[in-house]
Every structure is written in C-alpha cells, then in structure tokens.
Length: 433
Ligand code: NAD
Image (cartoon, rainbow, N blue to C red; front, side, top):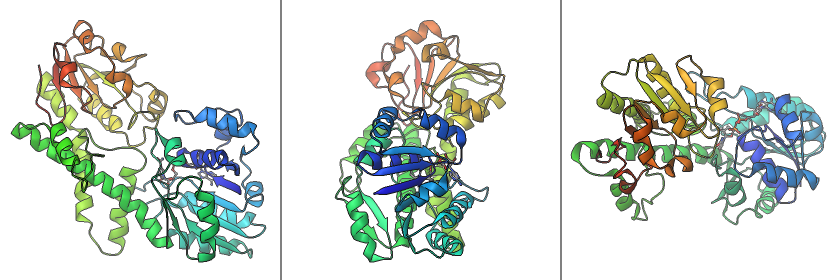
C-alpha cells in the first residue's frame, strides 16, 4: 500500500518505518524541516534502540522516504496516517490544534479516494471533527478510521512489529478487509470496533496502567510504615492471573508523554459529560506526591539540603529513551535546586533533551554515573537504565562525601547492597545500612 504518515515523532516515525519494513511504500512528513533534513541523512531525531538500521534498510530498498511536502505525500498515497502530537492544555484537555491543522491540510491536498487514519491519541468524538474539517476542504470521497497506537518508547520498534493487539475503529464496514489485511502482517490479534470505542480504548488502557502504578506506589508507602517489602508483595500479587505481574513496580511514579497527559485528558472527557472520574483523579494525585518521596528521603538522611551536593542518575522518564517529557526528574531537579542543593546530573542519552527544557548554574553535567557520584552527599537513581544496575556499588564509598543512595526505582537487590557500605533507601522496602 502507498502510505503517508504525517508527524515524524516517536509514533509517526516508528509506524512509518515498520509499515515500510512490511513491504509498503511510505512517505513520512513533518513540518519541522530540521527533523526532515536529519531523517533524509539517515539520522534519527529520536533515540530508539535499532532505529537507524531499520531506517537505512528501508530507505535503501526504496520503500521509505521523508518529506516536508504534505500535499505531494497525500496525493501519492491511498492511506494517510495522522500521528501529530496532542499535548495537554493548561486545563488538562488535549490540545487538538495540530491535528485540526493537519486535517485541513490533508483535505486541501486530496486528489481522489483516501482513507485517513488517526494514530494520535484523541478524545472521543475527535475523529468526527476531523471528518467535518476534511469535508469542508474537499469534494473528494474519503473515509475516517481510528487506529490508536500502543507502542512503548524504548521498545517501540519491537512493539510495533509484534504488537499484543491492533485496534481498528471504523464505521464503514467495507474498509475492514483492506485494513485487516494491511495489519495482519503484524499480528492476528486485530480488534475491529466502532470509532468512538476505539478512541476510548486508548484512554482507558493508559488510565488503567497508570492506576496500577499508583496502586502499587500507595501499597509501597504503607509497606514502609508496616515493615513489609513491596517487591515481595508485588511478586505474590502478580502470580494471580487476574492481576498479572506487569506494572507493579513501585517507584517514583509514571511520567512521559502519554500517561500524565492521557489521564488528565480522560478526567476532562468525563467532566465534559458531567461525570467525575474520582478514581483517576486520585491516581494523578498519588503520582504527583510520589515524586517527592525522593526529596523526603534525602531530607531524612541529610537534614536540610542547602549547600549539599546531590548526584542524579537518570533523567529520561524511563530507560532506553531520550524522552524527558513530564519525566519525574524535571520536578525533582527543580525542587532540589529551590532547596539550595547543587546537582551533578548524568543520563546515558537524555542529557541534551533535559538541558533544552531545564538548565541552571547549580547543575553540573557529568560524563558517567561515577562522575555524578564523586564528592556527592547523596545519589538519587531516578531512571532504571541497565548500566546503573551493573555498577559496582562498593566504589561509591570511596567516591562520595557521604555514601547515601536513594534508589527511586528499586533496581538493586539485597545482595548488591550488602557489603557496599551504603546507607540505602529504596521505595517500599526496608532500609539497609
Ligand atoms: P511527537 O511530539 O514526538 O511528534 C509529533 C510530530 O508531529 C512532531 O515531529 C511535529 O513536528 C509534527 N507535527 C506537528 N504539527 C504538524 C503539521 N501540521 N504537519 C506535519 N507535522 C506536524 O509526538 P509523539 O510522541 O509521536 O505522539 C504523537 C501522538 O501519538 C500523540 O497523540 C500521543 O499521545 C500518541 N502516542 C504516543 C506514544 C508515545 O509513546 N510517544 C504512544 C502511543 C500514542
């Protein structure tokens, strides 16, 4: 199939690459000329393991191209996938400005029958709005479908090539066969439903996962007070197939470009029909408070934080990505600076993106984890990158001013901590010295 993908962010770029990998002809379009120029030079503007090899292979095979010419891309395609951002407005509602602009541009570019698919996460009813916007611009026949995206940054290529399920929302049943065929090379777990339900499936899925995280974080807070170990609790709970073991890792809470914005948007979607989503409001509040547990633990171990030196390991919202959107690190770093601490920051790939969002004279940017720990009064681990798990913790006692390690992601085992001579604080587990 000839496919145009509008928006070459985490979702659009990966989807485009993966559709090309399956033999389709794909043009990825973005209004950001710098991104397109980088992509044309086979340089990925995002970090995602393995991405450049996939890009190169498909470009060289003539199946994948990058362009800023939306009109040409739409005219050359039968399927147009919209994958632009839908960030939060200050109210929490999804900002549909980009998607509406793209819909109008797609409408104006239309030169024949097209299928327009929305991959961006959009509130229920948005696809109908997109249909109206396109119809105002063109007399050409077209169909609208909703194909929400479930990939996870950090494993986005594998998630897209081997998804658990693909959801297709449509109201013209004649499209079912062609869309199922297009996606059947990825999985046979294809669920076809109506457009509004597809839109809701995406929000409900993210809200449920966020709920699981806030739930286990609340359990971890109780564990700390009653002397239980949340890691053991999660293992015991997860053995029940009705619960399952995933998303039960206690820590400093979720971040990223999806869970924070999608939970807030769903609260707003409910509010717009006079429904108060009490459970989800609590999930959001618990998540916000959880980030500050790191600071409480620092205060517990160091007293006041003015003039202390704190090493920070990990800035991205999760490992294997450079994405720092709504990362807990942003709030924690800002709060520590406001308390007078000086910070030594290290992340394997996310330092540039972090610095674009936040920089301060109290920050020293470090080249590796041990450099960030050197002469520090405490180190806080905020992202569970594999390289942090493999560190020899016994080195810290020689490097640090005070050997205090706050593990915000519970990455270290008792065996790793024992004998390292650290004051070790984790989340929901007994302290070790
Ligand atoms: P992103 O911000 O990384 O990328 C969006 C891209 O769209 C940018 O490159 C931007 O320049 C481009 N764009 C904006 N307006 C444009 C226009 N008029 N014409 C052409 N290009 C335009 O966003 P993302 O993380 O890829 O997310 C996209 C959507 O997918 C969002 O709705 C998000 O909620 C959803 N989603 C994201 C993820 C994820 O993990 N990132 C997962 C599932 C769903």
